[in-house]
Image (cartoon, rainbow, N blue to C red; front, side):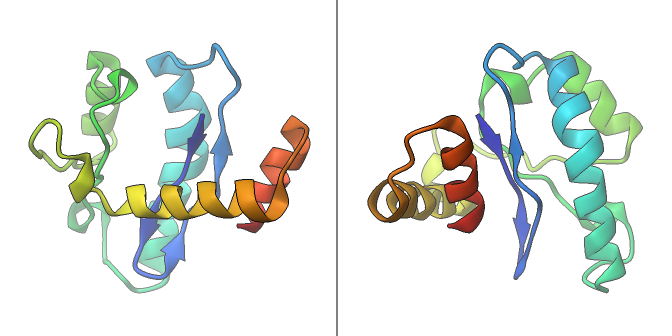
Length: 124
């Protein structure tokens, strides 16, 4: 699983989650703390927003994004989540990014190992 975020022309670092590490606690420890919060801070530093209150996190309906532990952590850290209809992944702009990335990785890089895959995803 790969996690990433974007806002305008600014993109987060990509986080590669190892297989079996998809619990809410692991997601918070491996994604939100080391990648989402610094990404939000980067948006503030770039002058795109003044504070976290002006940002809205858009996630799909994956089970990892709907747990009570995650909800509590987001509320405690002033992370606001966009409420949007179920089964509306076509409205999620990052889906287009993932589609293009998958195309580039498979057609331009053709990785054979996990390390080659990570490098290809970062280069795409």
